[in-house]
Length: 168
Image (cartoon, rainbow, N blue to C red; front, top):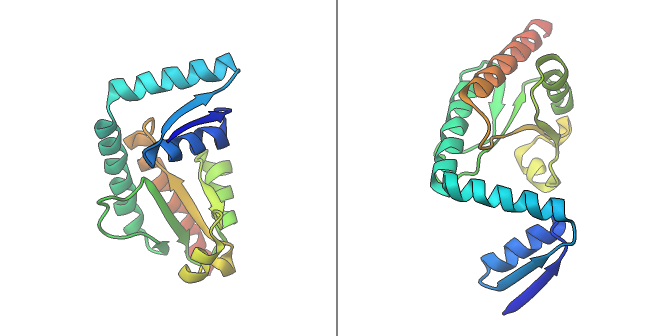
């Protein structure tokens, strides 16, 4: 099927990508020249770097983060042990802390970006048992993250967990 999507913003680009993934021939149209230039540059970067290399990089960093967080007393991880076919996102909590408080400390005190809350998936958090603490702390690993970023995140969570253990 041939499809056209007008607007290459958050909704249009995702819609076009999903249609293309389903086997459709899709043309995405946008009048914003800066947006188109940015998309073109991004596509060129991905093609030059290679999807396999990007995925391998993100997976290695995700494994490093998962292994580091797993060693911290008072941290609960919500992920599988086998990271095969796993996206580069990890969810965790510091025991006894609201997710928002952990995320705020990471942001303000350590300059580490993460997302906290129910992540548009409240039923998943009901199943995980994290609804009572308003969800979890989600780390998303991308192609521009480095091992230094991951070490900093692990060290920050370790300090926060230790601070929480001393409080209880």
